[in-house]
Image (cartoon, rainbow, N blue to C red; front, top):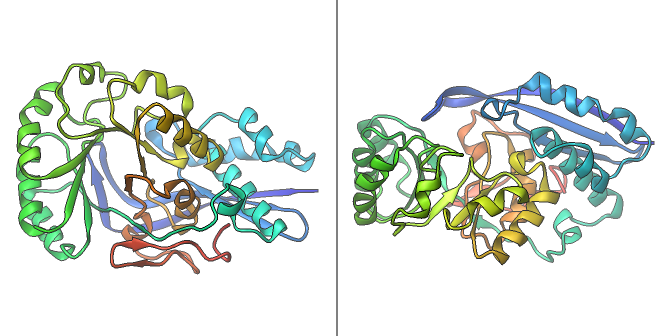
Length: 326
């Protein structure tokens, strides 16, 4: 008989983290454990207010599964039982971890991947003044890939400042729905000149039809506009890439299926994360193999990470130890 337990945790962020929608000082996560009497599988998710989630609502949704799990609900049945979102993500990843431990097999092998490779990950610069973003860029100029949080006003100056501070780094930017079509058109030639390689979610989800007719010399990536496979039809012709996040897809199971279908449709793949610990990043590394862009730097932005956390070194993130996940 399986036993489900869940809890919330708070992980302080180094100095706060700002995007176009506001500032966070801590990462609020929910952790799920599924225990079969011998082995324990774990998963972590981040309830996200922008999608109508709270810690309490996610905990309640997960706990509503307790009887189903005790009666033998499996990972496949879970996909029908809960909608895509943070709650399903934590439970889904816990099922993957449990299966890996029970079969003495790494989770990526269960997913059909023989070896998990270390990947170059972006490092995110919080939204700030151009002057402050320049200082942070100088401090992180050794990193191979920097992701800039933008908001509209002064964005050209922000990117110029980061380029000056980190002249050799690859740059990608994330507007978090903070631009208008006018801002987009004004910024595009400047961002091309500064060598920006990707723009993430420039226009608000549901108000992004203009992307079908706007010039896209830099690949445009859907984040808030892309959740699970049902999102894809509306993205074709507007976006060149999708950002797969397990908290949006509702776990690794749907994330793998989403990636496969997106690639068939000709979309490039980015794999990203919410602000969370290595327990949330580890399953995302499975779907991130060979992705065009990997952005799994969540633990680097926290004051501290979990014991047995992922290894980050010289811009790379390495596969998890079995003590962490999978």
